[in-house]
Image (cartoon, rainbow, N blue to C red):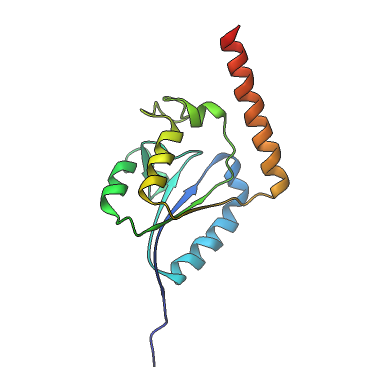
Amino acid sequence: MRPGRHNKIKVLLFFDIGGSMDDHIKLCQEMFSAAKTEFKHIEYFYFHNCLYDYVWKDNRRRHSERTPTLDIMHKYGHDYKLIFVGDATMSPYEILQPGGSIEYSNDEAGAVRMRRMIEAYPKAERLNPETEQLWLCRRQCAEAARDSDVDDAAA
């Protein structure tokens, strides 16, 4: 009997959890279960809303057992592929501002961390569990909020 074949692709899987993603828990669990059986080399991490200074493996210990995102880039080879699972529902300041995280005062803007991760692992995909109609609505809301912040600063 031959052992089951596994895909040799190495994957770093990042799940946005909490808040608006609570509606997609079952779907994410099914996806994670399928990914674990398909990929021989898979590491998973959780984050909330945007990739910041830290990620974690156990949501119950998210404040005590965190992994710095820089450590991930040093530990895992750059032949890994990234998969981000999330609905991208957040305020613009969570992406654009240091200290914008709703959980703690992050050192750098989420966009800086995301850009750094994508530069280290250029083979990356984002999976959004929501319908495409909601993507446009969320983007327009984020742009409107960002534009109003700019106008307020200029006034």
